Length: 405
Length: 139
Image (cartoon, rainbow over all chains, first blue to last red; front, top):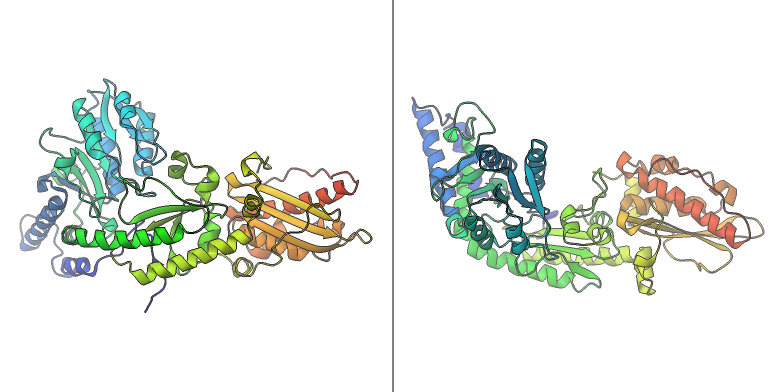
């Protein structure tokens, strides 16, 4: 039986896997010790659990457990990675290269750095969402200390050529930071093969709990250091003070272990469902996929339905299907998605987009229901869209002088 | 953000969706907003020459639920009103009737603009001057 509402917003957050919850439970009620308490069994148990989780997490990304710094999530990881390098390597330079489609946690961190005297280059992306490697290399200066490019984009799922990027970084002696929130646990990520120096990721995007994440910090070739952004008890080798969230960390570890076991089978099944969803929705007239379809996460698609406004579209089914739109009608700024605009999409197409994030618990029945509900709503709204009527009459909408509003 | 019952009702059962003959002398058409802003409203009125009464009203809207509801409500309000009465419809009337939150006030402004624009189109077609309106404050 189909259970409503259907959750297709897995890029925002994922449900917890019940196996993760089972692993966490004892660490709330029985083993509640502080991992930094060295003098009694409660502390020892907590420390042991954290060490084990650190191994599970490191294994998933091909790292050494000592290279995992626990954080409260990826926003903190992004801040610590970028600001931490900027401050630690101040004597080497003050220039950072990033891209316009990064998450706000990276973009706003860079803006903060600019205010304190740093210099930042924001690379434009190509229409498929990928950065231009030649532009990247050309942007490197003698003062460049960091390249911060995300592994995969949260809105369109575009996967950047991380290995090529890291090769360029290495060639010029620049560190590479990547926000890999959407990629880790979904596609193979290996910090050594990929040549990553710092990487932020989080548990709640991979069926783990909210409020816990990690920053990978390379210890060998080169040994990377970051300046702490939170001072205190000196946990995490002084890079991130604060009592460790033991149950969260245990859940994070378990989530990584499950992702490692199930990734191949999950990807195969979920990408098939994604492809079905996409193929069916693309049968509608004037539907466009946003971002690269070649270099893309297996569970994501982002589609614009021209001449229909995204929020109005969501309203047709959002009691029963959870989705996001690039339309910013609900946000105070009234600006549509900056990621879609960075691809060169007109504001009209950006306003007309839906983002689909499938997940481990998505099934075919849900996809069939979604295709039907969205198709019907698109047709219904086009029937009441003046733009659709004008388009059908052959009027060039770009030639109309719209009243400024 | 939760929508009010009235917005949901207009969205699900919009009143008077459609198109009147824009070339007819009796029909005034207002097209306001812009695709780049995420909402475009087209409001049309049909006026009885002899009485100056609005006999029919139709809309088509590209926009969010609140924009659709505001235009649907506008058509309901306009039918049976005289042109002069129609000119007194204020954007705050939509805000109150539909319980629009502050972030959706621009939808009500758009609906008021659409009414005025349709009336002016009708006036110009029939040899009258278009009325100059003060720029709405909330845009």
